[in-house]
Image (cartoon, rainbow, N blue to C red; front, side):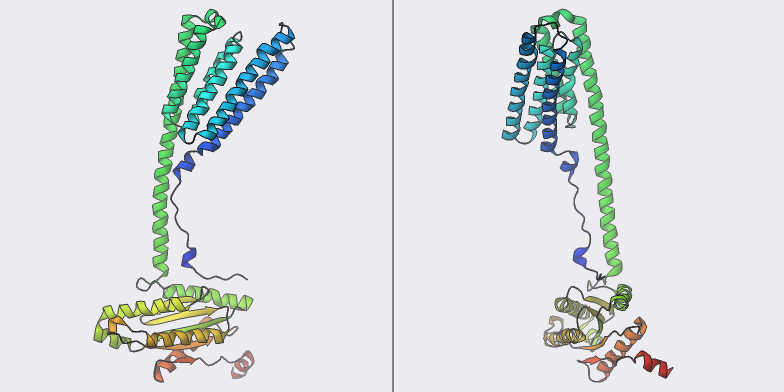
Length: 389
């Protein structure tokens, strides 16, 4: 069975945007990049195994120089990177990953110095740094790449002979140009992020205003209870649920006795204080499935659901008795009293007839001395109605 009870505690809240998690989860990305480095190790072993079948070098020499030695170096680098990721937190992990990518690229290019195009592998740290969307890490990666290039040129015989000074300058310019492009990508990304942040904040403000306006439209400004319009809206829904599922439904209409005299004698501020006091007591006595509204003026309405008429009547009486004993500071410590009309909905009775029946009981309570609860007369059964017709 589905119940349609409004509950302010269940209203959607507005949570602040977690910009750090939107930018990236540092450890998650570093873990993914490190896993990629492990894949590079496996890939180099597979490629070297294939290349060994066509190499002119003796097989044993090839395995030692191009498989065992580089694989051992890469394995050592990756194990050190794994240890670094465990020992260091925060931004240091990013620099460890960038440095690891530099050493991996340097090792591969240095050992396979006869394959000129492999020098492009020195792009790896620059590409890795883009994941962090930070200019300083991009520059750190560029410095690593250029340092690797110049160290290799100065220490590697084949690189020095195969690459001229002009070629070295050209490669340097190429790396710097690629870094400038990456810089532009990062700057554009930051612009988009700033735009997203600004739009989110505007949408958040609009959402807050929308929720607030919706709340104002549904509640009474003075008491915080639901207002007349919202009462009738949910009154109809609860009657529909009674007709569909047999949901127990009772109505109590509560009117403050001699309220005009309170306003005339003590002023409207005292009257407002009384209305707030009554609304607070109604909240304290009601259950989560009950619907409370300020119907208008000094009149309140409570819809009781999902319990017997006797239980709901007991609550109504508790409300009346509690108010008759509650000192009101705005009245110099004197309590107030209320009159209550009470009734239970009968199947196929209709909203208007049910409300008028309970309202008539309220007037009977007012006219018979006030400070009492009067049960409304039960509506005639369908057979009796047909006979009357």
